[in-house]
Image 1 (cartoon, rainbow, N blue to C red):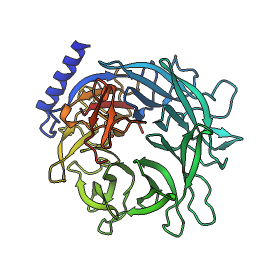
Image 2: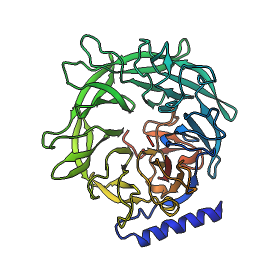
Image 3: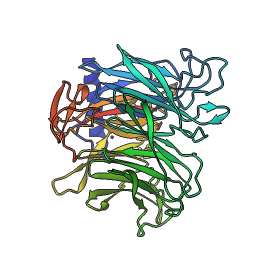
Image 4: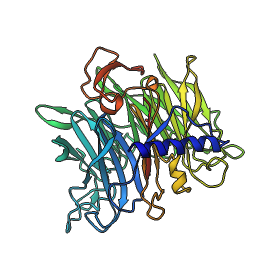
Length: 471
């Protein structure tokens, strides 16, 4: 392990020296590289990456291979555990309803949504069929010993073909489940967001359903994507409206509090709202393709004030046009990470994909501090889409590459782990966190030991995954 770590660090240093077009984030240290735990071909290893602190869950779309439970492509969730020194593969979860002879689901989308909430792990299969309809389902797991065991199946309270589980987000002990094809009512748009909470009497159950009035916006539907904070959930307006809807929780429950749509100064067509991420007082919204004498790509940063989210800053791409900069974004604490999956490698020899790292300075402005390099991935298989998906995960950043073939033959992707300075850590909210207000528990890979630390926050899908340790 030490030899591999040294070798990968040297490769990262060489890529910095040799690449005049890239400013390497000098704080990042490449530490681990993973491949899918089975000898399989995958068309989306790392399509979703979620961490609970000591557990890491990775979605793998369309796996086939000699050790897969079935011969047809299926989705899987691969689980890794932090051992105190490194991430170690623990086991995999496959759809519980795809046994031979069953037709409820082909299991291909199992794992599209992953969330840790309370003491449970939730995995969705939005294409799971009931009575022939794509109603979708969310499967709940509990940790028993060293393995996550299936406990129950949760479905939409309306029992309609809404693709329940197409999107999911969690915060603390609350789970949000999107159903973008849920039928409209007489006054609302298609799509819905179901809010689930747990109680001793009813267990996990839907306690509220959020919809957008059709009189407010002409969007086609809602809830293809979600992001959540302690008291808000941000919901996509799809696909023609170019923006997001914000629901806030007050004394009377959940209610629509704000629509954020593309600014009037931005020329159309626009994909504003194609990606978004929120944390504390920061909301980041991507727009990876805006025609303006070419393709202008950017992300907008909003700050939360007394009257809601207010525009703060635009971060424009410095890369060549057409990179899909802003197609995926993530924020946690003082760090924003933006993916550009179609960007050329430094020097422009081939498409590799790039990930840009931004830091909030003392002035409150976000400034670029470098790139998170594909490093060893380019050494083994130059062509890739590094940055298809990015997610800041407590002390780590996940960046996905969907087409790498690290053995030079079989597409399957990889997961690389970087570590950066302790002073740059931000902590992600953990369920039932101890400590005083303004403090949250950090555990496992967030600190490499268990402690309570003051958070630097007010109050981080696709195939190869790169973990960049932010702390």
